[in-house]
Length: 124
Figure (cartoon, rainbow, N blue to C red):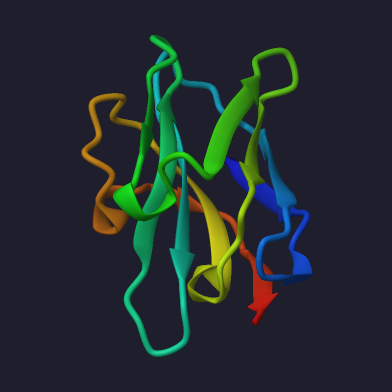
């Protein structure tokens, strides 16, 4: 059974930084994709960043390019999301998700497994 557990959310002032982590267990697949999504109040869940595990390619959504950096620890099956220069519009619940299809196009509806999320609040 796949389990994803996010950590690292919190309250930060605009311009500040936070690092999120996602610990995964039960990933018994030869290839998959793992990503970060977020959902702000009253908005749809959106893609933030993701990695195609076998090839290591990392994709970013345009709003976070140059500010967020995703990384992974192969041995521990964890991914991190370093978020710098945070803006109030980055406020959201951030979710870790896995798609068993390593060729995913990062649609939230295509993801197979989800964590419970961690809240990030950026004050102005």
